[in-house]
Figure 1 (cartoon, rainbow over the protein chains, first blue to last red):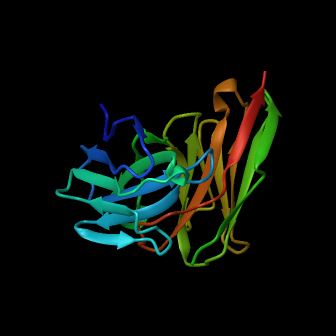
Figure 2 (figure 1 turned 90 degrees about the horizontal axis):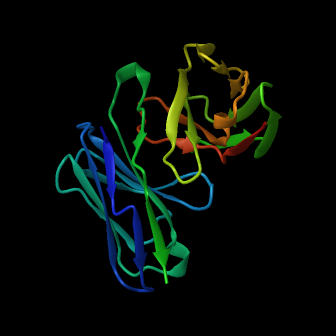
Length: 115
Length: 112
């Protein structure tokens, strides 16, 4: 009963070759997030969508872009991957639970290797 | 913005003993504090959370305590088992904010 699905689970790309990672969800959550995580560090938020509104983090490089064509799907585009972009990319979703806050559900991640 | 500090960064505990991980936050407006467990190569999973109108919450062997005055919260795991070995992240969020600020993580190792 996968709730947040990420494809592919493993992605190898060449230096400078554009790559797209995908995320889909069956939870009907209105918020979707993209995180970058390197070697057991805390997940680093790249950007998130609140409904259709895109929210970029100030320190997210322009090399990273995102699309959310509908509620269920969200894509992460890396226009020109560098060696430093090798990481686990996590997608997460959440919804407003009122006074119970936003519980985030994470997908299994896509491990990106840049050669 | 919010800043969350987490200690210790690594923790080794004998199986059956208790483990405690502590976090402090900077913004008094924060009112939601989840804890995530991430096993090697897997996704972070929410294991327990607490809101600022509650001082303590328990779920079987896991408990979280919150001290709003001191702006710190802690994760307590009792009767630790090998499957508790993982990296644990605390986090905080403010009001109705959908974003979380994560701590730096604690690698917990349970020694059989």
